[in-house]
Image (tube, rainbow, N blue to C red; front, side):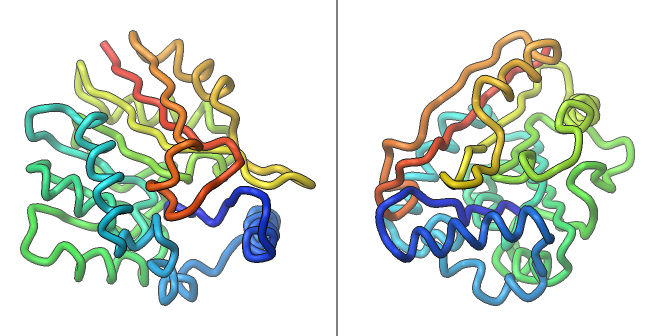
Length: 221
């Protein structure tokens, strides 16, 4: 599930959420329990029209112009999957939490979308190939991200792309994956790797943030 509980510095609420992120990284989060409140975060539920429009605009720029097959790994409750479906793409979402999957299915009822319970690192999609692998705030928490990226590369059609939204959260004990490291891991796998900084766009997060947040769009040959 795409976990964006990382925050910038400045308020007591942000400090509390930063601690939750660090604890989640160390001990593992009960994502079935978290599913109940997951969409309360502005960039999770996208309930605020301004936040929703900001993510919709970014996805339109990152995803292919023509409708295609999008694999949303760690899809959570399906908020980004819904935006992709609304843009005309066919979506397959994968999440380890059955409770998250239930909410995603309800959110995209009637859409061209299917949701599967499984491991984002090794999604249960058989031999199906995709035009886009979309992942938000998941890769940083997986063991051996280089190996995971190589596996995901095998799920892309020629000319397909990674759309990876990641970051580094926390100050006392930072967690995450820096943009330069992720770009380096993608360099052997993609012909074109582009990093887009997102920290300065408060509309994406529903507040100002001070930590490192970014997207990488990497097109394979």
